Length: 111
Length: 111
Image (tube, rainbow over all chains, first blue to last red; front, side, top):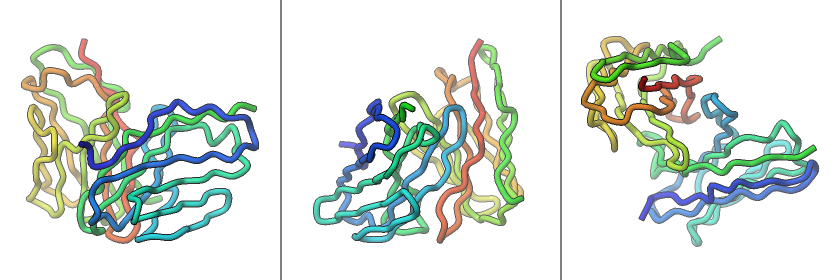
């Protein structure tokens, strides 16, 4: 079983839609959670970084962590064509360790 | 601007040849990482280094080698022992509090 599971998609939505991206994990020690956005042929860039359970909001993006279910989500409101990218989740027991990445979900926002 | 520079952007390798991918950072991060990205497999860790003159194997180190003689530099050599080297290679450095910063990647193709 992989440490982190992520539906690869592809996911296609119309502009303005609310997008929900999800990851599940098996290691209950994970406490630090990240979401990265990766445009085609580019390196990933950090979108959100959260600790433990709860929600964190940044503009149109909301990261949600449910440790009891070992489930994390990234919500994108009012999605834009510029949001079309692959989204990767990553997590770790502590900040000093390496992070474990999901396989990424490919998102296309159609104008 | 601080960041990570990977070069070259595209690299072609002949059968039986060793090639070296360059990674330089000016973020003053102690930890540096090499990942390989293949379609549908996410990011797989090749090697990482927490400090100068020290490095550890990741999940798929066979056929690869690294050095860390300077804090700023973490080159990756893909040796002839790596039988399936065609992939997208990502270098990253990590800050304890702010997660990974990735380079823009090197696409290696065997010809």
